[in-house]
Image 1 (cartoon, one colour):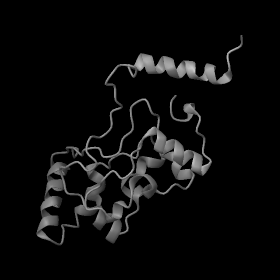
Image 2 (cartoon, helix red, strand yellow; image 1 turned 90 degrees about the vertical axis):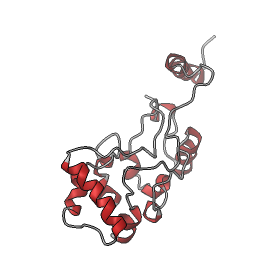
Image 3 (cartoon, helix red, strand yellow; image 1 turned 180 degrees about the vertical axis):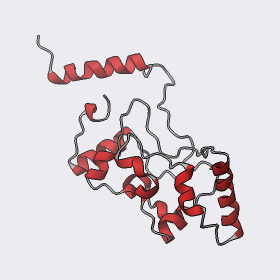
Image 4 (cartoon, rainbow, N blue to C red; image 1 turned 30 degrees about the vertical axis):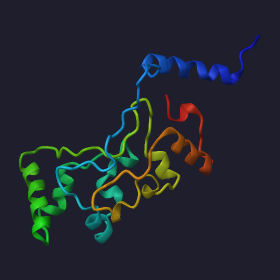
Length: 176
């Protein structure tokens, strides 16, 4: 008897699941634990995005050219903050922390807020080309004092979005 197309397409996925250890009891995809983890610097998206209207891609410039949007290097921040020192004591304190990281040539140890499991191949590029706004997945970051994960970024959530927009929902779109 000939195997159905569906049955054949599941075999590589089932082999991957078993090889990755996903079939073990207690296995769970690793994502950021807290929806809004504490950060080393109280970065104010409300000021940068909300008040100053800096577009997401200015700091997260690699979103359209790389696998990840990435966290900007300290030098990107210093492009402005070597001149902008802050208007309040609280802002000045946080900018001073930034300057210390810059002086030491040390990356800021940001805690990741948005992530997908390692077996998911996600890139921002096709989403940007399709006109999906950053806020669709990341929420209104410009109104957040601290970035908070607003979407679950689960497979079901992503598949629903793909189907609602007529985007590909074949397994190989994200699992390759």
